[in-house]
Image (tube, rainbow, N blue to C red; front, side, top):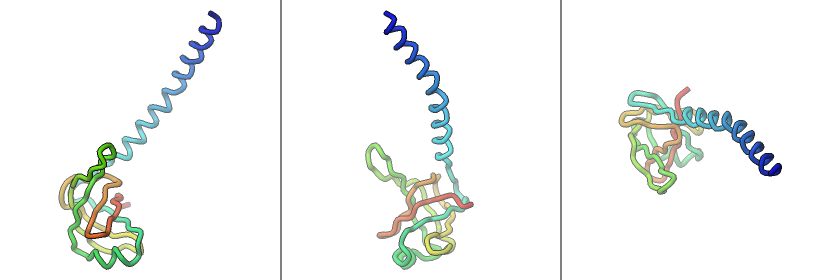
Length: 119
């Protein structure tokens, strides 16, 4: 009987201590859910120096896709217009259609670019 009481005490204590961790995780997830709307400027990150710059030109309109992790399906959620080059690995673009989240992917041919908010 004493052993059961000790186990229940430890379980309730661990549950009380875990509550702040769960609420902090929920806040972090909400911050990652930033939605950028039409007219917002974004940065498009690519990892290749040459390939993406050959395929993508200023004023190109690229569809933006979001990956559903459960079904592994891509869904088109908007479009961006490329405004300029920004260094070796970035393009500056403007959202012209839909609502885009951080981590969505803009695509053209073989190039895939990660969407990030403009700073």
